[in-house]
Image (tube, rainbow, N blue to C red; front, side, top):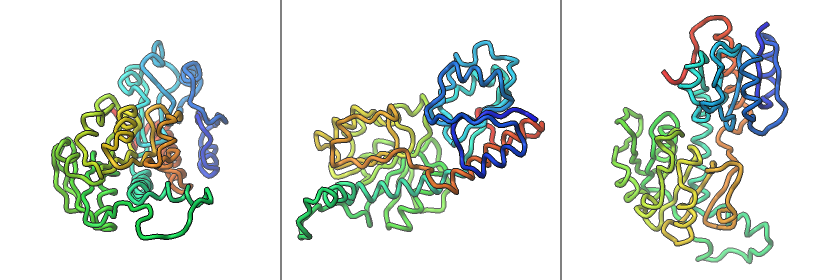
Length: 318
């Protein structure tokens, strides 16, 4: 049987399915692979299932042409942690798991929008502290999202799912910034990034990670936002320049932020952790058992296709 290496523990049903078709080695640690572990995996296994944090940079593939591994079946839709061109040059294909993550990630975006706008994290901490003195008319006034403008940066599958929730669920007007116009099932206007930032009450980042989008939101972009607006990031942490975000929040340039991802995960700056105007989640975007199971099964489908010589269901990188 072909050899399969899984770099993190996955749901039991995924591992059971994997063992029916492969000799499976599961790494029990939950931390990212080190460079030596990645290079060893390319030598020892036919297929590797890596995930976020396993930094398969170009130098990992040095001298690996002709290695045993022929596929990195990434567990996740984002694959900016893998140098796809370097992998391809070494004869190693890369796949991902699109679709499976869409709705769950959009749910987290909507949750962060509501939590940030309505100060839910701050309110929850107040109740837990025992310092809540009871309801009164001007306590913890937040931003009602109905009839407000939601600006979505990146209108792929996840961006469109967020748009549906924001428009049909909350009654928000949708504007978006994307490299090309999209035919979507939600009334929406395509605008430039600066116009989106200036017009939106809620700015939601839903772009892919990578060099093209790194620090897409920095000091100038945050300054362009309205003072009552909120920034939501469910994309990749380095899409937002974290130091600039901290400065903007401290200066009151924007009202708040909701973050499921961070620039240097799992390190979260103390300044963010101390601010009541920020809602922080531990990268929960796809953290539901059925979603993670579907992702695992999709990665396995790619792995099975590779060893059987069939077309890969979800290839990336052209």
